[in-house]
Length: 506
Image (tube, rainbow, N blue to C red; front, side, top):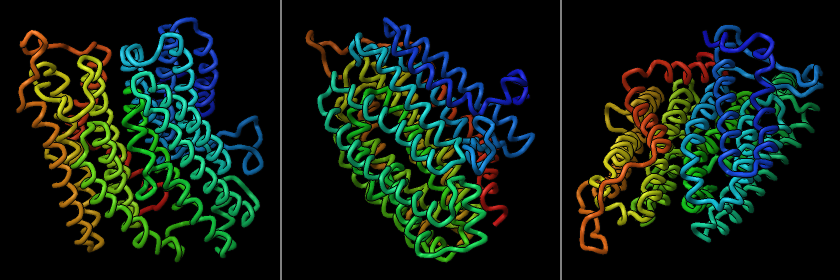
């Protein structure tokens, strides 16, 4: 059914169209005379990407791996777009969450971005959108770098455009630019070392050459550079220092989109190189699982959660929470097993549902009342009950409360850790969840247990409903946090297929 969404003549070119369409439409959006027209172009593009991602999922599910040769030049000589069960969940995630965020964008962007800049803002977003999709779908190592930079440079721009509301967006963007450039430099040096060792830039061909010739100090150096470069892009502790300010001071729409997609795509790229190119059975890779990824993951879960507890800005609080949640993913990766990797991929998808709803709700609060600090959330349960309910559901999912997807992914992480006999990892998961409960309790107690501040006339503010274009995607993501607990098979199936795509049954 999914494979028949598009005519065969279009479906065969879907891997190229999913990247090319946003790039072309970015130029069209920039030429629009008004922001509403640019938003219309962006919405049409996001719908097309969502449909293409569903179609590609259908093609991979029924026909296996898709290899698309750009310009008819066959790999490894030509540039290949390659889709398997590892990256198709990321295409689906970026496509569908991107569409929901674009729907949310119209009232949010109108509130935060100057009218004369809105067309350029949507244009830059589409470039970022195309870059993330390109990283996900390309089968060429150098083009991973190219698309990473395409998405990153445009991200610096759309974060800086939050300066209309808060000038600190400029310094947040600049810090991200500096650290992002360092990360990209490390990554491309690693790719250069791999090219030196293998003579190819095609990821599948690299893997075949290394499997035949073995590894040496050059490939070990490549591994180190790539892990640091992609770890910085994925906000892996302690390379996460760009993230809190970037999330806190960017426009609300940008924060919701980036929190749901950007670090996930970088984390996917890390999985692709670690498992597909270097292979987990190689000694230095196997050692990195336990002594790097798992250890760093546990430290991130603890330290970032403690930092979140003491934040006064609500978005910075959730930003540190995101660093802790990346720690969960790193712990799953560090187990080095199919169960651990599938749990990590499941948490990646579930976390996108949580953080998308949470940042959309904070954006709704800011849109109606201009609130940003934790104490300013006081009484919003009375004045904005629908948005507060969505925020509450996603917050409980973040903690891992039963009946939410957060519980599902943490359950699979615990199960995978017990298979390894890692009781210390289970203890870390429990402690981190309690810390998450501590900072979530601060937010929810302010929303539901405190009274709204009195207005100028001494009266409590009247109830306000967020615009439906904010409320609809936010409520859908909040509902998904519950729905996929009771109907977990689709996401669990995608996560297991992703792990099996690179590890088999190991």
